[in-house]
Every structure is written in structure tokens, then in C-alpha cells.
Amino acid sequence: MRAKESGPATAKAAKSSSGTSEATAKGKAVDAAAQRRDIKLGYLIHDVSRMRRTVFDQLMKPLGITRAQWWVLAHLSRHDGMAQTQLASMLDVGKASLGSLLDRLEATGFIERRPDATDRRMKRVFLSRSSMQLLERLVKIESDFNEQILASLSDNDRNELIRMLSSVKESLLALGSSESPDIDSDAE
Image (cartoon, one colour):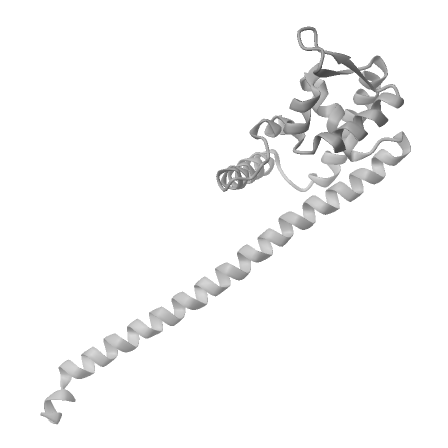
């Protein structure tokens, strides 16, 4: 019986088993490499975002405006007169945090808060004339900044990057991220 066990069929089974374990080992190595790559990609996305914010903040400093204030003004430029609670929801910030931010913008004359015409408890936020002038400058600065940081990418590369990052964003939204889907209008 032992002779039969060591015959060609057993050798073939051993070879097949060996091939399976080699394939499993290769599969695990590929999985580990893919996992390391994806972790690196996550860090890279985070680092690029953080570095972009830091450099952009430095560009805004001479204008006396913060990124958070710019973010509010940018949203109001597309949705002027929106309710303060809507704006807080769209920006994914607390009402109190937004209230403080709006207080500072109002003190500098960049926005006006007015009661809603039908519900006096609700405040609507409007851009002022001086903020319109500031927005023109900010858009120019951001456009120049984007051209500098994206200079090595062709138009096709940029379009593909938008498509890929939008896909990642949609996956995050599907996982229950609190970010509003309306924010991707910034890329337009």
C-alpha cells in the first residue's frame, strides 16, 4: 500500500498541493503589497490635503482672512441668502462654531445677517458688497495657486484625478460620512 501511496498519483497530488500553497503564498504577498499601497495612498491623500490647506492659509494671511472664512464666503457666493442653520449643515460645522465665524465676518463687513421674511426666528446670511470684491481677489489667488500645484498634470490627468477622487468621495458618503454631496460643486 505504501508503494501505491508514493506512486504517480500521490506525486501529482503533492505537486498540486504544493502549487496551491505557492499560489496562496503569492496571493497573500500580493494582498499584503496591495494593503501597504492602499495605506500609503490614504496617507498621501491626507498629506496633500493638509499641505494644500497650510500653503493656502499662508496665501490668505495678507488679506486678513482665514480658510474657514473663505469657505463660508465661497459657499455664500453660490447660495447667497441661505439660512444660517442650512449653512452650518452644508459646511458640516456646529451652529455655535458657525455663529462665531459669522460674528467675525459680520464685524469685518463681509456678510450681513437678516431675519427671514416669513420666520423671524431664522437668520439668513448675505454677502456684502466688500465681500464681492474680496471674492474676486480670492478666486484669482486660488486659481493661480491651483495652476502652480497642478502644473505637472495635463488637462486629461486633472479630469481623471477629479473622477477618481469623486469616486473615493462617493464611497465615503456611502459609508455614512456627514459631508454634504453639494460640496463637490467647488470643483466646477
